Amino acid sequence: MKLYTAPKTTTLEDGSIKINVQAITPEYIENHIKNIEAVEKMDIEEVIRVVRGSKNPNEANNSLVSRFNITHQVADFILNMELSEVSEYVGNKVFCEAEIERWNALREIIQ
Image 1 (cartoon, rainbow, N blue to C red):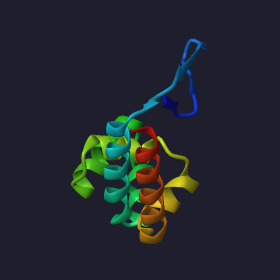
Image 2 (image 1 turned 90 degrees about the horizontal axis):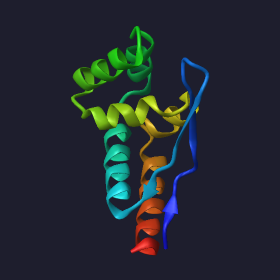
Image 3 (image 1 turned 45 degrees about the horizontal axis):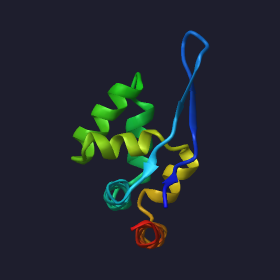
Image 4 (image 1 turned 120 degrees about the vertical axis):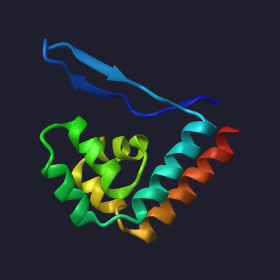
């Protein structure tokens, strides 16, 4: 069985649209779980302050990496979410544990 993420669209400067679809593999799930585990321990107010204080996404990524001692992958995970999603994950142990259980269940289905 092959599963894919919902398509994400980005409008480029020239007006064209870029569509990304990610296959959900056991490796993808493992990386996603690692991202959740990393953000679960962070302070939401500090994350927001760092992101808002950055001039662009690249600077925000680098600032998150240096401030929280996380990988660029985890910083991308944060920056690719809507603020409402970030607030669900960051510092919310109960929510993160439930999400990890959900992703582990999905891994069992696709293996």
